[in-house]
Length: 182
Image 1: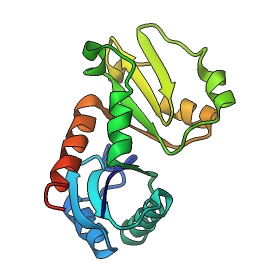
Image 2: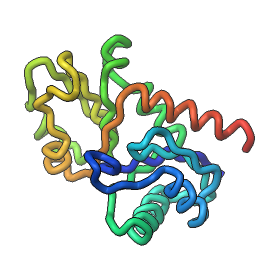
Image 3: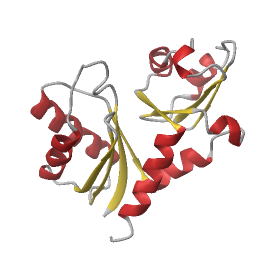
């Protein structure tokens, strides 16, 4: 069994796409995942699976959510090591890292597409793209940024979801907890 962090995009935001976490844990257990745990209400899941294909895991979860709740959501799965590597690769200073966002991508974008967005810049904002993550920092806070994840998704031809530093740290800790008994 491998441990995976599953990130759902756009659930329980502004009263849209409501997914109670208890129902989600039960659903994912019923479709064959083990040790399903959630963190806060925004679609952060740690689970175990004998499935080795991340694409199959993502598809199974998408289908299960569509069948049960009646709407589709983007699903991004990362292995325990992938998430730890993403965290460790953050290019910012420790101070900035603690206040940054990790925009996790469903794949590594084409290098030519990455080059096409490198010129985008906004005052008080920094980003770097490394493999399947956009590392984003704003000195004025995420809620006041001009940065737009949808723009980057379109320009890079990827699906993405963002998590703050605290959430990534918690998911890594949950992944480690899950492996103590397995």
